[in-house]
Image (tube, rainbow, N blue to C red; front, top):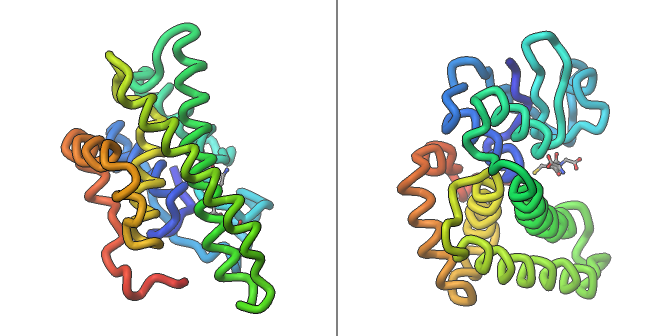
Length: 205
Ligand SMILES: N[C@@H](CCC(=O)N[C@@H](CS)C(=O)NCC(=O)O)C(=O)O
């Protein structure tokens, strides 16, 4: 399988952690792409030119990250998906963590795609409020008794890792319980460390 991705993308990291954690590392060739200058093969797989995009063995392309995550987990025998209604609750938690990630990406894109004079502080504040409320809720979810490792955890860890990278870990002061959770996740999932972006100083803003 081919995974179109990039070393710094949080949505890609979610999937790159899952391929490793679920034992598919050898089956997946990671191809780093520039979403700002997509090549023909990547565009043929995903006309939206978004990462992650996974090309299955039979050649069909899967996106977005939730679809790819569900596919990989199903292929592995669904270790990360609770049965019954709890499975839908787990998907809503994944959507929450993905939504936090999306809001962070939008704040980063505001900085990247708009000149300073054209940036809209109200829009940034609107996204930051989503990030805060989303992290508040995620903190409650991971603290539920019996909360087991699931796909949403990979999305949440990815979002927190991206906040560390882009905003110097400012979230840690506001959400100390999540810092403890992230440490425990990293201990349980070595793929978190393995996919850490190694050169923050060189990261495109
Ligand atoms: N909902 C998508 C979001 C993916 C996404 O926004 N990826 C970013 C990189 S982190 C991207 O491809 N950006 C390029 C663009 O929007 O043109 C998912 O879950 O995969």
